[in-house]
Length: 79
Image (cartoon, rainbow, N blue to C red):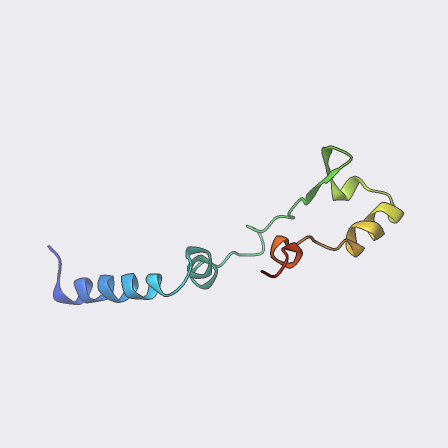
């Protein structure tokens, strides 16, 4: 049986969730212990296929850090 308090909390949570993204909500509510954490493996596309950045040599890692990302809205002509 639902109490008035639990119904109010559910409504508050629903209103709060509507004002933020699900990822933001998870970031604020979820915490991991150091034992639960693991390294994130980053992959990137190179010459038509995907490779983990960790397998790059020093020079290629430097190039990866210097990459500039394309933004379509910047490339559109102003009409």
